[in-house]
Amino acid sequence: MYMYIAPSILSANFGKFIDEVNRIEKAGADWVHIDVMDGHFVPNLTFGAGVVEALRPNTKMTLDCHLMVANPEAHVETFANAGADYFTVHYEATSHLHGLIQTIHKHGMKAGVAINPATPVSAIAPILKDVDMILVMTVNPGFGGQSFIESTVNKIAELSAFRAENDATFLIEVDGGINAETARICAENGADAFVAGSYIFNKDDVKQPIDALKMAIK
Ligand code: DX5
Ligand code: ZN
Image (cartoon, rainbow, N blue to C red; front, side, top):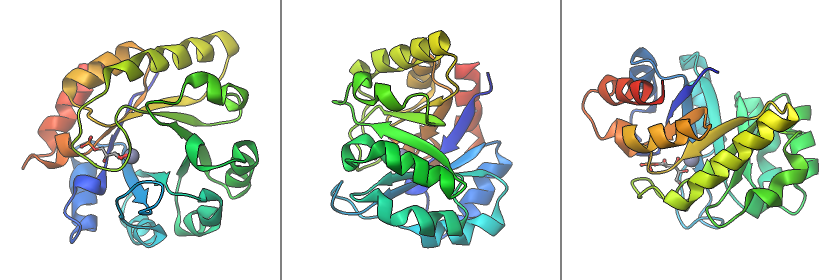
């Protein structure tokens, strides 16, 4: 199975998004992870579809949008028009998850569902065959630079076992506190997509941490 490295531009220089994205693309990243925060579902505020629209003509990488927002339904159309590839919503942010997944697909995007550290896999069992990706949050959402929460690992294993037993096709993405060591643990338990913010952008040479992640998950 192919493994995807998805640097999060939450830790990039906000004044130079296009340069930063070019830098990670050259260094071998697969996806750009775009953390959309609304100051409501999570306390922090970041950016919206305008950033997706600005990046789209400047990169071939998959635009992996992680919506940490209340009422994600309201943003499907604008993100689709902006050129988003994955539109990942939080289980905790909507009462109409199944319908929302259908709407995301109708707009031509891949649908992802994220679960917070306190949310069990059983909560999303009914939609596991309908989604393209499950994002297991390995920190509480809201900020970059936090420490990996070990108790989330058994959820990766549980999803991986479900996928194998049911011929399901969703990817398993992990996000938060990912470095070479935690990425290795997640990969061993079945993760396929690895978001990393501070681990990549805190280095002058972004190729070094991207290579280290690739080595760790092989
Ligand atoms: C956290 C975001 C993450 C964040 C990860 O709410 O969803 O994508 O950028 O940052 P690091 O890799 O620094 O934990
Ligand atoms: Zn994220």
